Image (cartoon, rainbow, N blue to C red):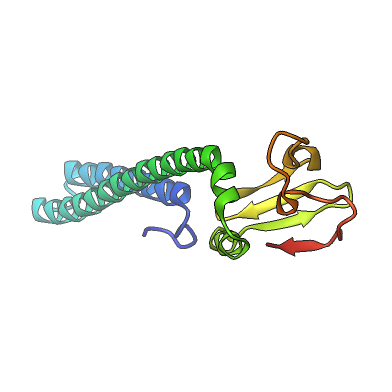
Length: 165
């Protein structure tokens, strides 16, 4: 890694490697100028250019690796989104078949956390990514749309504190 502080941030890593490539090119031009003036020998020029070529090769390899990782991450995110959409479509029916213990185990696996806000809206978070905000009307089925089951209903009079499920 050419610069401290860029580790872990792919954009900063890529910028650091691109900066390194620019410096290598500037140094290469400088060595060629020195050789043209006769300030360094052909052997010194060859050694310096070989070292710069090695650095250039490393930088290009690292940039290609970062690009591959970025593409893989994007593919995983697309797959995650498709999987979440699939499960979101089948979840209501599947959840109705679970026992309370199975449902609780599923919620724990998903690291599902719900915060009931003072305005009666729900803030939902878990392993699926960013927090989402829902109105209580979006979550409670209207009468007759699903079988009546108290475990599916949210009561506005319920406690307004943080509830991990």
